[in-house]
Length: 221
Image (cartoon, rainbow, N blue to C red; front, side, top):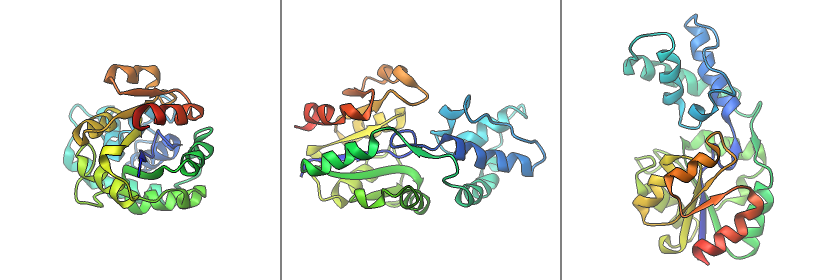
């Protein structure tokens, strides 16, 4: 079965404000206040919790200690779990586009570097978990993107074949994951990186979810 696998943060949903809020909860707990900005730092938010912590620490300290990042990461996850969908929204047209793919006979799934339990919880909260036949998160298979194993697992769990699949994402991590798996990649241009993702040379750019059907046909038929 032809299969389309989606990244979650920055691809299906704009989760940046809630992610930034979780990092700021860590910094407030350490007495620094809100170090990160939900708009200006959205790009970093889509690169994960540790990336946000490193950025925040870099604004306060000459050197960033990985021990400090590791110590605060569980605190960040707890803060995020307690307020996972305050500001998060699905991108315009995402639901309709996924529904149309399914009706056209494609399998659809998710491969994210968000912890699986949090990703699953968010999708349920947004009311779209049942749309996806697979949900592979960080460490579900022991490694995270850009290792190809999570992507392959997402395709297979959805009932598809890797050679007839492609990845929709928004960052260099997604681009490298697709390359490692030997499949095409489409990168969205409506995230914080905008049209700059073209520099990553994906097989396709996705300016809006209204174009998902035509992009899919071009990439996997």
